[in-house]
Image (cartoon, rainbow, N blue to C red; front, side):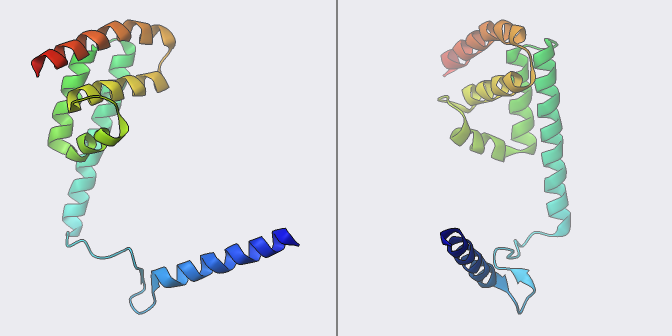
Length: 140
C-alpha cells in the first residue's frame, strides 16, 4: 500500500511540474526561450564544437599510441580549444586539478588516455607528464 501511495504521489508531482513548465499558448517549454542567435550561428557553433571534439579525440588516440608526446598533445589541444571551443577551458576549471589551464589540459588528456588505453602506455606517459607539468610551472 505504501509503495502505491508513493508512486501516485510522485506521478502527481511530476505531472504538475510538467504542466508548469509547458507554455500552452506558445507550444514550447518554458526553458526554450529564444537565444537571439540565428540558425546559421547555432550551426556554426555546432560545427566548431565538432572540429574541437574530433581533434581532441585524435590527439588522445595519438598520445595513447605513442605517436605524439604529452607536450605536443597539450599544445595541440590548447590551440584548438582557444580557436574553436573556449568553453572547454572554462569547464576544465571545474573538472580538473591544476593551477593553470595548461596543467588542467595535461591532466584531462591523461584522464582520457587512462579511459581508452592500456597500463604500459600510462607508465611511459607518467614521466612525460611530470616533465611537461614541471616545464609549465617554471614558465609562470
